[in-house]
Image 1 (cartoon, rainbow over the protein chains, first blue to last red):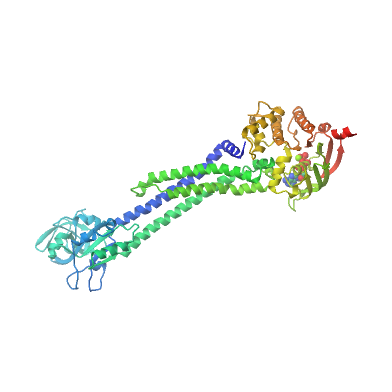
Image 2: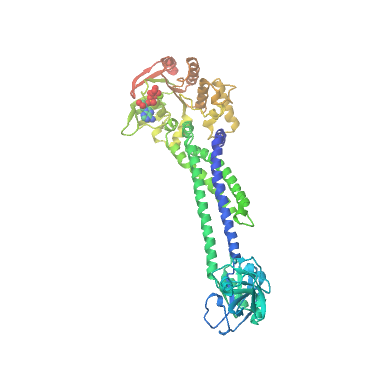
Length: 383
Length: 237
Ligand SMILES: Nc1ncnc2c1ncn2[C@@H]1O[C@H](COP(=O)(O)OP(=O)(O)OP(=O)(O)O)[C@@H](O)[C@H]1O
Ligand SMILES: [Mg+2]
């Protein structure tokens, strides 16, 4: 008979109590690990998704004129331009050092052209890249943009009194209206949208580009670096990050991180309290037995190591199992949270296991101290 | 020869000012080694209180208690634990065995802190259990033992460290008289080896084995009487 054996015997004797204590620790730690590893993965996933959502860098020519509005949309030839962008610049942008970070480069050409007797702005972009450049557009009729066809902004459709299936005449050509955009509240509501090649032909500017919209994945590289590199590749261009987009992404991710942290902290708190309460009441129940052990000559250190061994074994085992279960749940559940490539995050699991073990041990201290402070007579008489 | 137990003006009061109850009031006596003392008195006279103080299970509010040369009030908590383990064998009226341990394991509990090979601990426990007549029942749990058997396991546990002083608080109180006799035989045998025995009892019939009787009343010694001479003294006469 030694302390270790005594601790083991007591655990075996109170199997259901040990299982209950262990279950409390297990659930607390498993929930904590699952939630914190899911939120930490969601952080990455949401950043991916946000990066997919539209451009965050605009590349336009430098002009003498002060910029008016969004990305120096140059209409007409009133301002002096030292530099013109062409379709070939796309390759230059695509060859910067951080090229792997660039998700899409979409050339846009804006021009004012008469359409069916009304002077409207035409916006040209590669039809195949419309879904990438404007994923939020909703098109009545669900049409794609192919050459020889146009989409009409909501206001443009109203002004022209045309709908899906109608035709618009411009530069002696007829363009079929493939669809009408639902109002976006942006300038494109008043525009005619066509394939960039058609718009270049209409404006008689082959290869011309008004500006490029660049979508860069900047999960852990600052967008400023990409901006600087594009600026070096195109010395005559004005490259600017759309701060609003960048900042709002950051804010969204930060919010998610805070939410995840808050939820994990609360779960850890509840789990921790559960551990403390079960361990404390378990020790309290044994005050009388502790009195007997002290009566036959147990030093207080022996009492402490007895209780620590008991709760230590239970909390070690159950927090390890809980951490494992938490990882497994996070892995299995991650598709439901929009995580396409689930990975195993170890840091919450390690933290959870350590927290479970230490809470289990800490929970034994107050009642053990109280039991040790009583005289054996008082302890035996208790309960 | 210095007495093995020395009490001087020992008082014990329970509770706080409002509900203060004096259990012992300035008790003094000496007990020499080899005495067999029976402590009697009415219920509430302070017998259990006296015995637990002698056993180092609680400390008196006032007075000096010296046992085996150690001043109990000067010992720290762990020193008192060592004293209980090495000097005192304590037998409770209600046994206080650990229910999840077998008879043998219960006897071995006081040795838990010692680095003795497990085999040796087991042998010592088996020998003691055999000497109290429990050979063959070493692996029973307390729930599988009768009251008398449980009390004998508790006595074996009290004797595992070969203590010079054995304290027993109504050890036969829960037992029928025949079973009680067996327990008293064990004490007599232990006393016969030159150990000091103090036993609280209600039963006057137990007096005939003892060498001395102390009767308490309201926390004071009402009567202190020698019943027999100690063997060493009778030889000297
Ligand atoms: N923990 C306690 N708190 C308050 N008073 C106590 C406590 N223990 C004992 N007493 C009081 O101290 C006095 C002596 O009690 P003690 O248990 O020593 O009596 P006793 O002689 O052993 O009685 P019995 O023969 O019934 O066992 C009693 O009046 C009792 O009420
Ligand atoms: Mg009593």
